Length: 313
Image 1 (cartoon, rainbow, N blue to C red):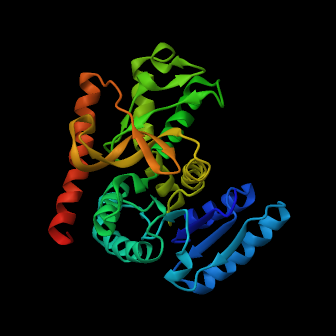
Image 2: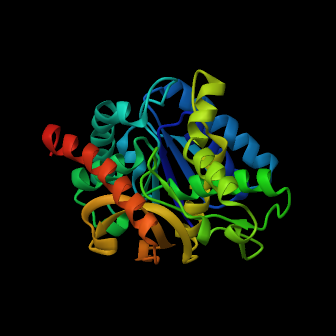
Image 3: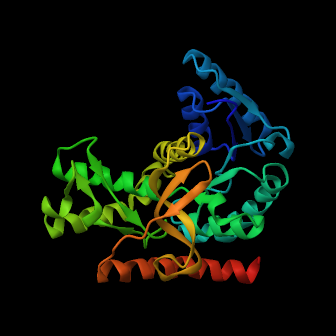
């Protein structure tokens, strides 16, 4: 953890929770928080710094005054954008958050062009695409946080159903971070045993549907916001894998250039994360139904990309 710097742009619930997690775990030496609400960010930086000291962590947390404070960042996490509200689909967020993403990326491009960028803003896949096209960065340098979160939600619903195996459940979800995501039961296990060997088709179908609506369920319950604990923790795993060059395999939203038969599109697939960002994309063997669902998911992202191309690029 020698002189590792993480900058977080957008310090709402997800950004602040992420900063708290990183600081208390001592994953990096410094964290910079940047948000248009300067007084709020200063207060958060002070509060999180004090919690880090209570945890005997030597991570220093500061509030950014301007874009120049992003300099020398190893990782930049972007959560900036308006959150999804009840009755609002991820797609409704597209144009507003694309404008915000373009503005944010200009700062990253100017002051932190060597950083690995993790995008958390929604609609996720379209925001990764926006970041790539606006920045001109290489495709390994920008990655979206989605699959780890969706997989964690699937694992929770599997645990609810089977009632055992807590901490031993591995789930796999591909495709776009939205209603057309593709949970993969045959790649999801409890202590190494595929859930297709444990649960009935009906039970698996229920888990798949719950996974797809996992985020929306929380939005409806909260009424005034969306999930942040699980998204923040999922993002912290990605930051740690990159900073420590762990070469861990996670499902993430990335740019495809021929993989799975697709080009010039962003979607969720298993990748290896290390110090260079996306170091490898893995191509899973999908059955015909999964291929069809994945194709449908990619088409949903393409619909958003088409709007972006028309309006922005």
